[in-house]
Length: 332
Image (tube, rainbow, N blue to C red; front, side, top):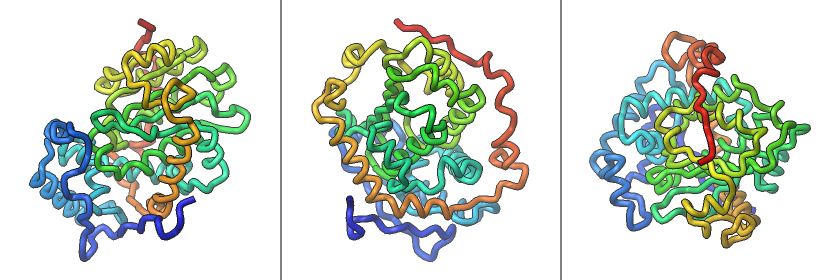
């Protein structure tokens, strides 16, 4: 357990504070390749400073945003994920705030001390690996079949992934280098089908496509049983083409090791450190960021209008044409 002294302070949520928090505006310290990574996302000191200032001015004047973080680390999360395109980053902020309002069961009360979240963390449902790739990517391992269909819903999965995203969202190197996701579907059974529908897959991927500030570098699906193929096809089929192109399905972890540094994995999957060490590091990170994550519940945006991030626009019919958009996946 992280002590209160080690817990991070809560950033200001005023949309136009008297002074802004500029911590994090400096160059991120990372692997030797960080310079090339910054170049690839069009980042330098001047671009960083100008874009953060522009976003702050935009938030202060935004007619529908009432409360929002304006500290540099929070805003850089959106700018870096969108390669410093102000327009796309600002749209993502609107949709991120809207998603928080529309899906409280996903976003509200992200507390690692909550019994349900704590249990899923303890069993290793989703784990950020302790060590990064050579270029600084954060690697996330999810064993989706560990959800108990008799107890859990898709909301539990969403909450855990968002808990992880918020706990590591301020990491400058992860913001720049991105994330690799590995989904182990070995334990998925027919009983899990009741947790998922085409509409729920569409809803989740809509958030990933439009409102989730992260650089997704690769997605692997490992040990996919035939019973889970329609889930994988549906999930990937709803993703943007750019992310689809970064998806790979592999038969098992031995095959994954041909494309991925196996040393990063938990010992139980052929790596070095036992799963328990990765889980403990995740819990400590959640404790350290606990107050900040809970404070996010106080951010607010008005959704009763006709803009693209309005309540109606964000909750429109998501079933139409769903099946036709699927990408047929096959093992190599």
